[in-house]
Structure formats: structure tokens, C-alpha cells
Image 1 (spheres, rainbow, N blue to C red):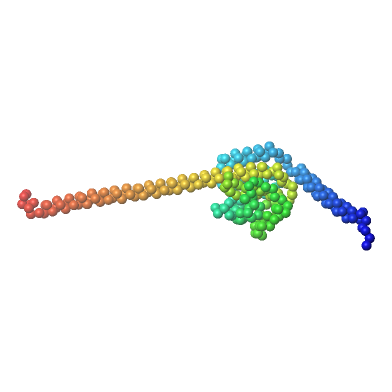
Image 2 (cartoon, rainbow, N blue to C red):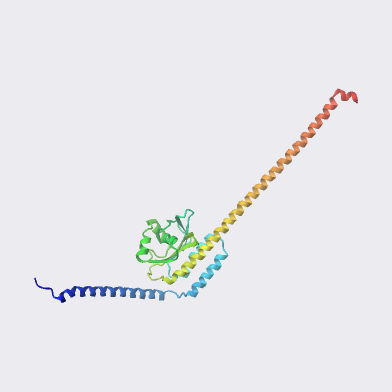
Length: 280
């Protein structure tokens, strides 16, 4: 058996190196194409600087400070979500139910949202609920999260968003310290590079403002309910006291009448007594 020439041994290794280089070149080209696509999308969108976004957040903060209506707060947050991120196909805001295991859709871009509930941890909203901070979701990760929706839930999403299915999304938890209140999801439509990591602080800031406003509104509503209950209790107390006073007055009047009756009977008895007649 003849010996294998050293050059023949090197040929397979050389081919593998070429294939590896070619794969790396293709990967680099894909990254360049993605960056170019992102730049093109950003150029097509209206200019929206960081200062403009800060102004929007300040306006949201001012508006949230003067309202204690939960429904108005939720709708304002959804509207301003789309104002903060031009090109978004819509925003959805979910709040946690008392059991802490269910999320209910409470506001969407279409006005009155459909009746929709998700399990905590299910779909993008459920992921956002448990997330420590805002996150950007796209590609296979977003597809896997959307696959967790039922057919009915997917149809409900499609009804309230401008485009469906989306290819990117910004997710942010609504929480105050360790208390989870809900989740905010902003979908990016068909532009895969509409959202960038620099968007995350802004969506989290909006979610934090929403969480504080919702918590304050809940406390305000709870205080109003307690005040209403106290007023009703005081009213019932006053009614009971009035009935008690009336009953006592009636009893006193009855006692007086009984005493007068006894006195009259005693006088009549004395008058009818023969000894009384003999003395007179």
C-alpha cells in the first residue's frame, strides 16, 4: 500500500478552513445587511430624539398626577406608548388579577379592549409580567412566545393591532418594588428593526409611571370605598339612634300615661270607698 502524499492530507483541512471562512463571511454580511435595514427603517420614521421622548414622558407624568380614574390612566399609557415609538402597530396593557396567576387585557389602541385573559408567564405579556426589567423580543424568541396564544387569543390580538403577526416587540413589567401589577407590550409591526436596545429605558420609564399612577388610583378608589362605607355606617347609626330615641320617647310617654292611669284609678277607688264618703 502506497503512502499518502502530505499535500493530499492538507487538502481536506484547507477545504474546511475555506468553508469556515466562507460561513463567517456570510454571517458578517448578514449582520451588515441587518444594520443597513435598521438604518433604512429609522430613516423612514419621523425624527424622535431622546429629548422629545423625555418631553413626552414629562407630559405623561403631569397628566397622570391629576387623574385618579383607572380607565383613563390605562388608555393614556397606551396612547402615549404609540406616541413614544412611531411606527408601532399598537400597544396592549395587562393588569394582574387578585390571584396573581392571571393577566387581563385592560387597554389597547382600539379603545374598548376585548375580554382577554392570559396566564402569568404566557405569551409576550406573560413573559413581561415576570421580567425584572424591560426587554426587546424579536425573531424566533417572539415567534415562540406568540405560539403560546390560542387561536381565539391570536384573533383578538389581530383585532386590536394594526398589523399581525408582529416581528418585534418591547415588553415592560408594571411593578412597584416587589409587587407585580401587570405588563405593557408594544408591538412593532412588520419592521424587524423598528425597535433598538436604546428604546428599553423609555418603555421602562413609561411602565414605571403607569405602575405608580395605577397604584395611586387603586389607593384613591380604596379610600373612596372606605369613606363611602363609613358614611353608610354613620347613616345607619344615625337611623338606629333616631329609632332608639323615638322608642324611648314612646316608652316614656307610655310610662307617664300608665302612672296617670294608676293615679286616676287610685283616686276613683278612694272616692268610691264608703269610708271616704263617711269622712266627707
